Length: 324
Image 1 (cartoon, one colour):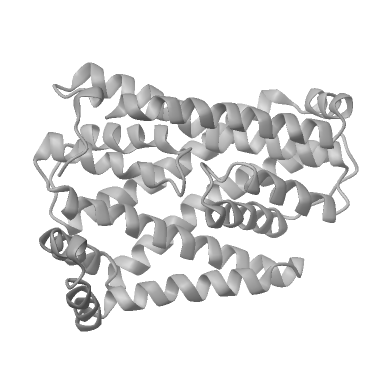
Image 2: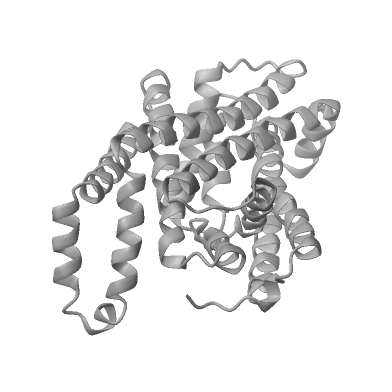
């Protein structure tokens, strides 16, 4: 299975490099290099640490969901499975993270239909928490309210539909008439049973709170990048504004459904910084630094986790078949 994704990950890395190259031309390559040179790289490990705290918080949410669905797996193994999926961070919508479900199946025998809804619940609660941060900052920044409210209504609507069991089952039953879907109706019912447990009021609130903490760690990292630049450049950005820019750009990247939000996220982030009258070179440099410290750091963490998973598990990722 994993070998099939290696080329896609490599292509995403090349695409990411091209995005950075495009940003460098836009910001004037020499000035961008100068801005990166002014950045105090001694503080970069702190930014990476904040990103890793995001991963730790999300791991607690993953463990919480496993407990709700009564899926039992040793904490260390669960942690390796969770981090291994980060290698799929550059897949569209991060849906490559369904790798976690395949690994759970190999290790515990848990049907993929039962655990895959965790990825859906993770994305829903991530989006809702990002929207909460965005809507707060939008009124300060006075930008993007319509998009944020629209996306918020969509995800709240999806959550409400999933939480109304009778309505959801009626929709599933109506879809059974479609030949392709009728073949998988049993799996769909198993999946819905799982997602229904995860979007009940208490799990939903707990997961959103964990997600808020997780994303605020990365917002803090972005704010810290801007703060470091403020010591060498005449810029001043508050935490709320930095959080809005980071989350809004992340939201745009996710909506674009591009691998890791590549292109859309960088363009949005750089553009919003420029609107704040931050020089192009500093705006571009800040974007590159935070994307390396979040998206590409996640991929590196995933590669390391895959190595340790393969080393200590009886199951090898390349041997896992894409079937339930």
